[in-house]
View 1: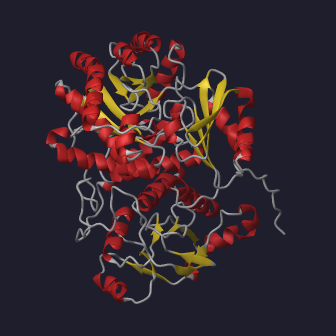
View 2: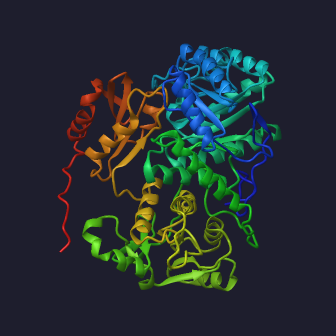
View 3: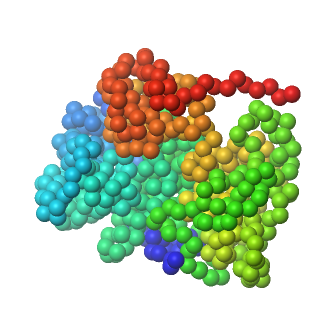
Length: 595
């Protein structure tokens, strides 16, 4: 497979060149640093709380703040919020987040520095309708969108403010869904249609985003977008905003964000980032800043001696088809076998006495007890042996290799026969005994390095050593596999961050749902504060818990609503009932006691 122009060079970091777009005083793209932003979690009509949260965010390093504007009334209050911020000597740029309401966008654009529109619902009412469009009918729809979108474009141009054309995997229009499906290609086409309208009226101060709760979908969509923009011409070099939507909370949310955002930043893609956690917004900023800092290290990465064709299609996920081999008490390799987790002998011995309590979170094999071929991918003789070997071998990169893990394993996979399974390491320089590296940095680094490669389809087994804690390193390995979808060992949650549209307390509700359901291995539950992204992002979830009205919750199976207007006080219990009705429930096991 030939290298493709989704980035400058998949074997060597160079940041994608984009034009500069100004958001108030803050420049995006061009020669500017990668910017960090977040979003308020409070009611937009609560001016005092909006100002407080904004000032709190700025204090911890947030450079752009987004506020939802679901109605004209909310949008009008942005004037008051902005005035109070200026009075407090805070000129941070404010972005109005718009869904469904073009009139709210027109109001908001009078007061703030940037408007975010979602092409999936700005001019369309999503009905999940199945319809075949002729070319003429499709063009009629585009003309209707032009008529609706043009006034906002002209107002933004007149006021000199920016716009984000932000596609969400969970809210593509019926028109796009019917022609392109719920795909990265559909996400890209949805955004490009709106960009063409903006360009038609001479407006260029916009950025793109391609968000999804699934890191694989997100990565493929951004890659497809960058390639498409190159095809459209050099003047389509608009900045890109990165984010994994509905990432969740705690370690899971940070890992999922690192996989999606970190993988793209490592390829030089991205000009501004937002980490979406189901936590107070101030907790998002350290994670985003750490990911940006990790990306800066890639600029120092060594270039391998050659750049062979990639072993994978960067636009469509497919797992590398290696042969299966015996590993530990099972097998590794083969497209249908779950990715295995390895551990050093020291780690294994340190947690062996907890094997019963740890249950599924236990290493599959011990590194020192297996026959593993360690190579430097720049060593031609070692690669010749693998090329001529009749049997499949488990292969990994030697410690001390000076290539970055992402580059080294891409380089290895491109040069050896696909039959050889590959063991991924998060680092080639594990910390010294007694070292105490930063917990967040080690988590994000491991998730970025291993997660990016798994999303490339590379990797049959993984080993995490950057985290020195024995139990923590194994848990981190399993959580990376869960976040990528390569191995499900616990209940999977898709939980959106709070905002002014949210109809219940997401943090406390998510905690209640986890408490009742976290033993349901293999069940995926989506927890959505409102319907903006809910039905679409829940497409691959088994069950959904969605805010339908103040104090009321709707329950879904997949993306189909089945129970409506349930009082919030009863909703978690009714969700459990729904899981039971559909045969997905089992009682939590009694905690085992080690003998």
